[in-house]
Every structure is written in C-alpha cells, then in structure tokens.
Amino acid sequence: MRVVDLTLPFDPRNLRVSFAPYREIAVDGWRITKVTFDTHAGTHLDAPSHQLVDGPPLQSVDLARCIGPAFVCDLRHVLPRDTIEIEDFGPYERAIQPGARVLYRTDWTARFGQPGYREGFPCPLVSCARWLADRGIVLLGMDSPSVGPVYRTPAEVIAVHEPLLRRGVVIVEELAPLAVLTDTPCQIVALPLALTGLDGSPVRAVALVGD
Image 1 (tube, one colour):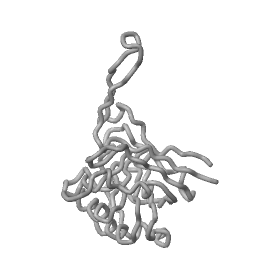
Image 2 (cartoon, rainbow, N blue to C red):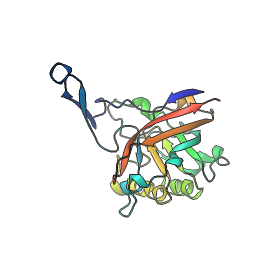
Image 3 (cartoon, rainbow, N blue to C red):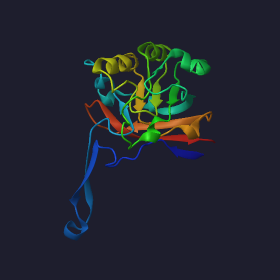
C-alpha cells in the first residue's frame, strides 16, 4: 500500500497561519511553538455550521464519512472563472451514487503561494452542487480553495455550500494537486481535529493506494 499526502503545507506561506516561539531549549529546557490559524486554513473540512445558521458544529460530523473509498473526477477542462456543471461529471455519473466519496481535479492548488491563488478557480453551479447532494454522496473534495466562488459575493458562496451541508456531505477543500490519483482507485482519510463547537478544522488528508 502506498500513502499519498494530499495536504498542503501548513506553514506561514499561508497567510492564515503563523508560528511564534513559545518555549526555548536554552531557557526552558524544551522547545514549544505557538501556532495561530483559523479553522479554514490550508487543507480543511467544513462543518455544517460554517454556512448554515442552524447547522451542527464540527463534532457532529460523522468521521466514517471522512474515511473510505474515493475516486477522482478529472475536471481540468473547466477554465478559470468558468462554472462546473452537471455535464462535467457525466463520465463519472455511474460512480456518483449513495455513499460515494468524490474528489474533483482542477490542479488549482499547484498555484498555492502564488499571487491570485484565491481568484478565479472554477466552482460548481448551485444546480450541480444540489445534483451531487441529491445523489447521496458523503464526501466532496477538491484541489481548489473552496467549493464556492469566494472571489464573488458571499451569497454566491453560501448558495453552493448549502445543499451539500444540509445533506451532511463532508466538504474537504484545498487538497493538494490530485494528478497522482487520476484513474487510480484509492481510500481517502481526511480527519479533523477534535475542536468542540466550531465550524471547521484543518485536516491531514492522505490517500491509500494499492493493496
């Protein structure tokens, strides 16, 4: 079995993460670093309460949905600032069924750390998000900063998240580029921290490939 890391670097290259010395060996006898980040920094998972006023918090997420068989949908043909439509998932429709864990590939996170990283990445239409939720998937992961167009209006971002979160779909955003997994069956593991009452969490996402 091969372990493929799908997690972006969690360090100050991400402006939402900072490190500071907290204890030093020369003074205290050991080293501890204080890490400051928000709940949606880097590769992360959205809890329903992230976008839904009445949404359950992070501890309500069914961890069984965060572990299991997954497959990659290659959507690299969708251009920047274009929308992902139901038809784009057409070649994978038979596999998009109840219990599926769907990852879609845009290669956008290859731009991580570059100017404009959070601008223009392709996102599903609301109708596409609703279609995925209605088909009963349990996890939707992507190698882009968000399932919703954060470079547009908050209402547009919420509209894409809402049908997924209301159906309990685990949304895993900012996966590392998925090129190594295309056409390769795998198991995904994307577990959040045990943060009580919050709206999301960074995850360490890996894919397990092979026997």
